[in-house]
Length: 310
Image (tube, helix red, strand yellow):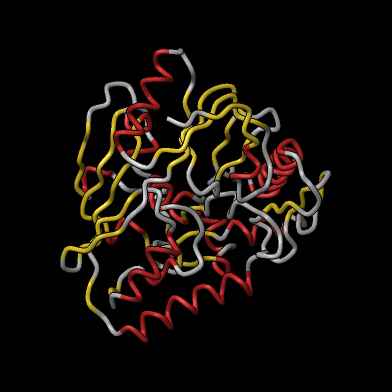
């Protein structure tokens, strides 16, 4: 095990924000994972699993424990069922699907991060969600080192959620995912993926470091009837009817609001971007500012899509 000390985590963050980890190790197999977990247990160290560094705000103080960096890679195919290492980047699975004429994952064009992160948060876009293609997920309990295999229904996927975010299963390390896709036309698949990438480049602030959407969209069913009517123009299917949080933030006049080196994007207000060596504390102040503004104006409590590492 190649254990490193005092590793600067901002180098592993899509945000380019974050302090140092006390200990840091890359794992490329279940065996290396168990070795790292045993080290943490024997030395009474806290553990955090880091993947693509998206969707996570790392504290300026870093992490006083062991960061296990997921590099379990590899994609193999059994029929239309790719078996995918959890550390595989989404873009690499998309390229595999294009090369093998596998359809069903095109909605993820341009989506950052790893397969494990996408499973954990049931990533979705353009009316698609990763749950739609999952056959089974393999994981390891980080306390007992027991291997678990769950089918789709056992993963309890929900809106940007899964069993791997809940108490208990949240202490599991996803190692491998089996997907089910369909044979399609290679050119059509490639074109749909390209359209997704182009959309993100045109509508998201890709010129700055970010960790994607800060807040979840709001289920239309959760709103009072009067707000349902008021927000009719800013509802979309994602894949069920939701009010677009980015529109609410714009209506609250938050576009371009800045604290330190962090800014609420003028292009897409649900992105808080790092425009000038931002600190995690800058981002957190903007998050609280946005939540307060929406609460005061609409009596709606925004829920973060991102997670915090302190």
